[in-house]
Length: 92
Image 1 (cartoon, rainbow, N blue to C red):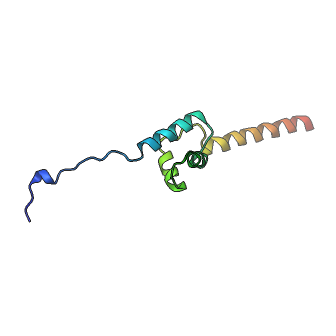
Image 2: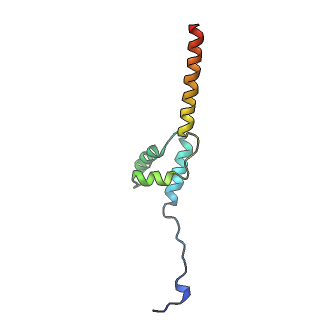
């Protein structure tokens, strides 16, 4: 079967979830501490049909890097170390 080359070129498709991504970004800017689970609940309340896994996948690229797992643990370790030093000073 022969086809012309003009039939076989790639045709780009717009992102069907562009509006949803934009709304997630708006919520993330308003509520800085909201994670993907919280944003999923807020979107459900607004009437968006969305599961938790797609919400996680869509939120990952626009997630603000403010809170990271490692920085939380380092901060907790620093706090604990400062408390130990304070306790040693009080005991001696």
